Amino acid sequence: MSVGIDDISFYSSSLCVPLTELAMRYGVDPDKYRIGLGQEEMAILAVDEDVVTMGASAAWPMLNDENRGNIGTLLFATETGIDQSKSAGVYVHRLLTLDSNCRVVELKQACYSATAAVQMACALVMRQPERSVLVIASDIARYGLGTLGEVTQGCGAVAMLIKSDPRLVEVCPESGCYSEDVMDFWRPNYMDTALVDGKYSTIVYLKALRQSWKHYQQAGGIAFPGFSRFCYHLPFAKMGEKAHRKLAVTCGESMSDALLTEQIGSGLIYNRKIGNSYSASLYIALLSMLENDTEDLSGWNIGLFSYGSGCVGEFFAVTVQPNYQAYSRRKAHVDQLESRQVLSYDEYAVLFGQHSPRIDGEHDFLKMTNGRFRLTGLHDHKRIYIETTVC
Image (tube, rainbow, N blue to C red; front, side):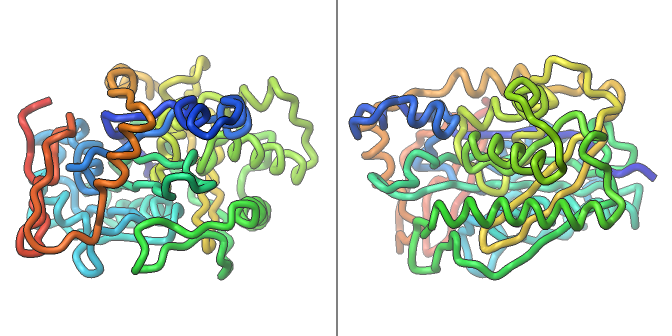
């Protein structure tokens, strides 16, 4: 039985900052970010948005009266947790008016957890083919003003409906995994920005890629020439390019600039404008490829590498289904990115200071988001979410 992604949609904030703004503020050549990191813009969260509102907004376009009742599980992947006990997915469950006979759980392992959710979802569907699983990955990357990681911030959410006989891609059963306890990136409970050793994290990322690929091959996976396209976890677009060159060397394959662009270029388009979205980034890359590649990918194999600092890596494959293009939401996604409000550096800096996950007591948030859902405030330590007027 074929199992995989039947539908996919993403959401990011309606605010963004061009990296040229940061370059001017810090007196550096804009090409340091545009070419060195491969990034153009970064999405900035509105004060009344969080992982719940983004996740619900990402999933909303996929749902209708027919498929809501078939969703037996909601898996919410994030490393931007809002509560030490209650799953962010439970809030989303209400906002999306899902059936009460639906299990909900939150998964965490840095940027990797969405892949764990996808694999678990496929297993659940294999067990109950008549049911589907909604996977949501939603995250906010924050490093602080003036830090080395500032230019790799961003936010975004992706929602995927996992079903039997999927319309978009089949998830192949073979996979290769690698885990190791390392301190390349982490965020203690008492901090609202992450701690990161950037150079070390790159080294660990590439090690996890090599080891995951090795395990994938031992599991009977597809050889390198059997893939037409590849997608990678993207803390920044250049990391995907670096990873693909490293994998090619590992496999004894040559990799020209033209072939590199052909094999991974279409998967970088959305991430260049969103920035780092942690657990969502790999699947936003896959969505970007399905919606923007100039070739008909039907029947082609796409290799996916998922990485989460700390660390866990996994390499696996998907096969693109016939007529996948008929179910594209490209226009809505492109319109969303092109209609964002562009912030100056000063506007962004003020907004950055208004976000605080540690607010106690009574607090109301100014309406700022253009999304379907918003966080209106915290009352008696309870988060209050509502649906806004129809977008």
